[in-house]
Length: 129
Image (cartoon, rainbow, N blue to C red; front, side, top):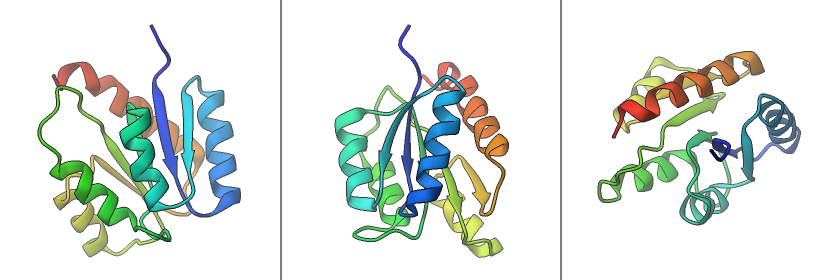
């Protein structure tokens, strides 16, 4: 079976690099994007199994990426979205969940928590068919 592919989208290069190293180290395939447009293009071209999405990014923010993803016609493949953002107000978390994000972590966060969230989403994928 192929490795679970995780798309990491964040405009902060150092954060993206650390997330990529830790995610790959946990055994996942990694695809990265440094802005919202690139994230959207890679969602379409790479078909990731799990999406880690920052909200404040250039060219297209994470909110719009999430809106576009969830506005697509239903697909047999559920792509869970984990928001990892510095936006930490309750209204931001509620907005993310209303737009159908599956998990929300606020920055700064521990990479262990990100990996746990990925594992949780992966454990739910077979039940989401």
